[in-house]
Image (cartoon, rainbow, N blue to C red; front, side, top):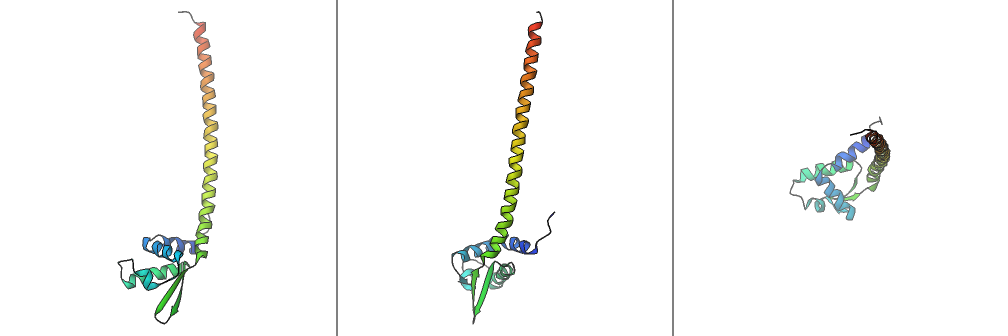
Length: 131
């Protein structure tokens, strides 16, 4: 089993919340201030602040402070790390499922061949018997 990766854990935890995913989606379009990011949500300022800290801790966003304004940008490197992990596992499972499909096809062919052989033997016996 692979060693736990705390960075990936933080990334997936951050993305597990729909509000944080929406924030990441908005930042994918353009950098924004925390106030702009908070506008569509009917949650408190402390709640938005907590979401932003989780996204920062996961490395998904960067925050730059100018006076009282907090400017946020998306940092795609964290998303790339998650994408790499997902791609590896997608490739792994696709290969396993392809192997399973091949096995089942071969198994089905063998089963059909045995069935045809059994039917031929049975019909030969039937011809040899008298009513």
